[in-house]
Length: 284
Image (cartoon, rainbow, N blue to C red):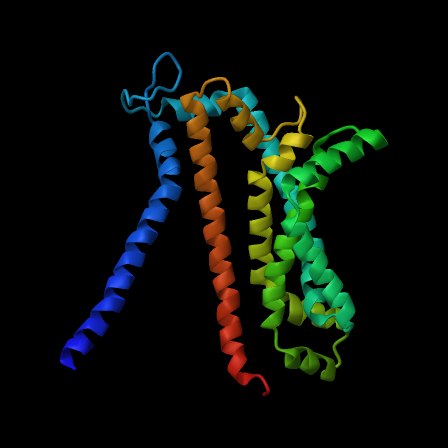
């Protein structure tokens, strides 16, 4: 019996160790290219071009990227497009996320839920081609605003799902108490609902900003020589021989994205903790 117990005890440990090794290998496989690109952003290179061999350390390419007017213009475009996409996503996504949980008609909730997930699963290439054909047929010239219109639907879906998670943790009794005290719907929304949903809305806004800033596929169809985004510029630069400045710019974007995602993750944890704290007090 003791032999059986020892064998039964070792098998789970061996399985856990194997899964741990497999997980580590997957993480290395996924993040090794990013780590290499970060290291090569400090590579001295040869004659202003990236080389396979690491020829020495330098931070010159970060200054080079900063002084590149075309690169700075694409960063400015990406920041403006992402800002407007995030702002529109917060307004529409918050209302959509609230309606996904609180709309009195179950069929409407189902339709809105289907629309939200449909926007998420539609391939971005289909979205890009469809919008490009639409603008061509209607005669609408490609601009910064057509780019915002192309990127925003996906960001709205992301924001709506995050806000929906926050609404699920909202205790209805707080709204009922506000109504009993004479508060109007607008006052309840302003002083009860929105403060509770603030972390979820902020997390949704940050996620929408990150999704819009990093969007490559839809942007590749809707950009022009005068309205170009940073991801499209970096992708185009790689086709003519990578410059270390491109790696430096990509490293800055990666760090910027990680910081925003970390803030969004912290805000989402606040929402989850509020939900965990509110659950025991809910009526059965």
